[in-house]
Length: 386
Image 1 (cartoon, rainbow, N blue to C red):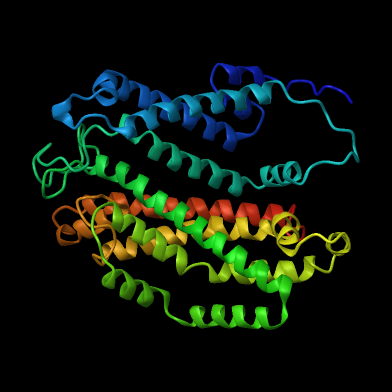
Image 2: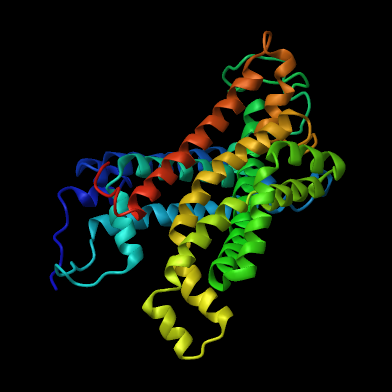
């Protein structure tokens, strides 16, 4: 074992995270880290003057709120993670001998870093997530506050994205809308991936009548048009407030697991014939233990890729529901709801629709790039092509 020598100028990253990476040719990672620093400086610059009012609001201002505290803790964690990444690059770990065994996740990271578009997608996704987490420190106004400016004011200094017909600040609404839209995407995909993994692993492992019954159910649900099914369910069970967000997440999760189940089933059908699974059976391990501890972990790679791509699709579906007036009800802001609010002003105030639409495009593209990078890193046939 030997110590890797620090790369030239890598320690400059300790002063400005990302600078060391950029000077050593890793431009995308360097630009991503510097973007994180810019977000941190921006949040501190705009949030510090309002810190007391945000963290300890008066009783007449609504009392204690959790969001500013989450944003403050997130700021600290993002700063720690950013500088730790720069320190890790300046002080690389002990080198591994050629041919020495390495973990699957370490190998995945090494392969993923070879794909510049995948790395770009990862940093773009992180920027979107950090923006959502730091929104209470960055957004200058309450997203639902009326008459913070004149109605339908075009973008300018003070109102970066203009105002809507009620004089609400579009920038604040877009930033707070990111929290709802991204949360719906992540939680709904997490729910669908969990259900699909359980169904697919059960069908693939037991086979026979269990497999036929579960796959018949999957085929039946796939044959139903998802958007029509969503419109019918949302219209029938429509509710208000936080319950509407829970309803949207539940419906999107319960109608998006079928593809995951097929992916997991195909992986389990191959894995269950391997020697280590036969050894588990010979040892008398119960079926649930074999599935949970041995089959599912080894079948997660394609699920991760599918989930990263499905988050962008789920955000689009939620935006479509909100555009049709069946998403999260007003005044709660989501990207799709803001686009819907501006459709009557496309000629006179196009900025109401343009900016949330650009955020939707950026989010979907970022998750697609990330998913493509993960696919290339996990598929031995595609490694080294990027």
